[in-house]
Length: 233
Length: 303
Image (cartoon, rainbow over all chains, first blue to last red; front, side):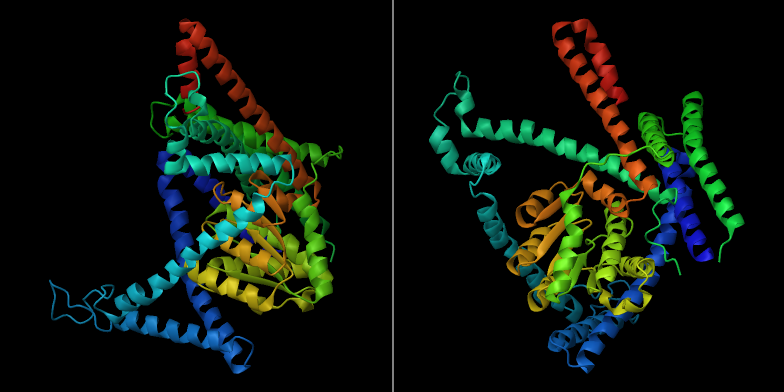
């Protein structure tokens, strides 16, 4: 019973304290204490995460499972960065305390840690991010196929927005005077109308729904109605 | 072992808690109004507090009504009805089910909602004896996900099929996590992919990779900027509030479904506020004497 009651009590109490801290400046410090406790737990869990990373990858290597070479690369990278960071290998001496060991910064590109981060890690993450452009194109290709009324509306809207974003948009309709009765035919005018009125209204409806969902979910957890995260053993 | 005194105690304490929460919140609001000058309440947040009290009250009332046994009508969500079909398909194909709980920590309510949905998905997967993999980007999420999946296996009556190794931590780094998960997707080709939680630029990377391997994809997030990507690339998407209602919907428990119904009152309240605001703002254009009333109403709503 304690296995379920104690976590539920901690959750309910933390939730209520955070709620109270938001509305009452006098209890702000209580909320900060709760968040400090979370940070302590997260720090402990980080060790658990690192341990799990080691266990999973070592098991992959020892059993020669498919993709074990990736596991080996992961572990080599993990230990290299951990070693560079903890031992401050090649750290630039601290200007104020040049004789004190481990006082220098290790994040600069002059140190192995900084160099690896700057010239290996950052380009790799940038590569992953850059792939997004191709995926946007392929997703748009599928989404904008005019197969029904909704798709045609989506395609038309996307066409107007995309065209208005480019120089071609101004070239095509920029000659229509802004004060004339036909100003609504300008692509830049249509873009503003779509993004500031139609899109904003839709987004606000979604945001309101999200806010209500957040309240209901939080309440279900605080009141202990949703206990799906608790083991029955 | 049947312990009626404990059950009775738990029910009584739950009822007391349910009754005390709105009373406490209401008392805080009333006292706040009375002690506005004393500084122990953030006066700028009083309208929000009132709205919170009303919405919380409505949710609790929804739960109470559900407990009376009155029939509840909840709109069908195609995405959630497809969960069982997706897991069944994975079982038939002998492939795994992938569940990505977003890239944020447990401090984000979306991750919490994602983990509660994971509990329902894991229960169905346990019943079908399908292999469920949960790679996480935060170690504390891994710990929570493990406990949730373990609870689901016990609940399904199959504790022996729970394998802790299938829920693992990868990295906190956004694109490092993406590289690991998408690599796994391409190599192992899971038959069903669930993306439930907080997502940013990685949403489309996951969804397009899942699409390329022919997996059934069900996504749910409350990040408005990522919803179009999921809608474009996934088979089903839970949009905003649907995502938060997912756990309650899948559980089928009356208490939880009642809380979803309670949200409708919140919608009614907000719709009324929007209509009154629009009417006042429009009337103020023609009757300048109403300008102050419109401004006051806007200020009350925090605008």
